[in-house]
Length: 210
Image 1 (tube, rainbow, N blue to C red):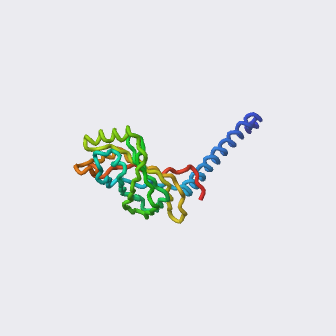
Image 2: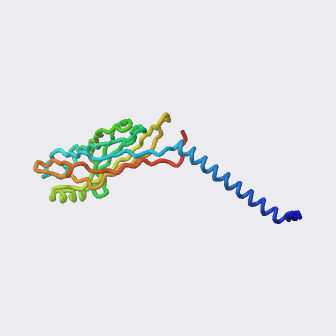
Image 3: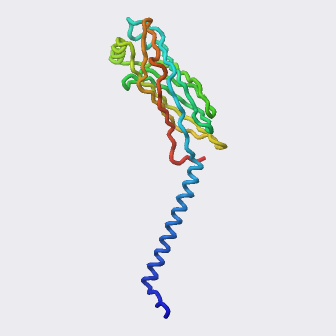
């Protein structure tokens, strides 16, 4: 005996299920295609590596607190491009020296470029800013213990070139905490305990057209 013909309600339910399954698979396929296209246009970019290799302060007059800030402080970073495929152009790199969150000195570094796997020294000659007398007094109190704890921040823009694609400009932040600078008998300053580690991060936008 032949099966009775499906009722209109059953047929409608079956069609809805079929349409739902087709829509789900189409949506999943579109997500996969979009993900592949987005990853191809926006590949993962590794942030460069930074560390402070030296920090020097020329001798100053201990009887005149302001003379410490008239000195030309110099910071040398060791910058490294850790990738074996990306090339990095540093279009802008500005360095700030902070004491307990207060900026006391700053410098702009000339643009530079690193090929894949390159590393090299980047020097910043710090120009003194106008410093509050309370900050000066606190630094001199720390000097009695022989060392001062600073923070060094970097802010800049870089272009990362990968493969045949032209470089795009990204925002980069560099943060170096607990940079201990010791002061010695001739009132000159230098980095304590060897190099100081930094955290560098390149911020990528979700979508960046070629």
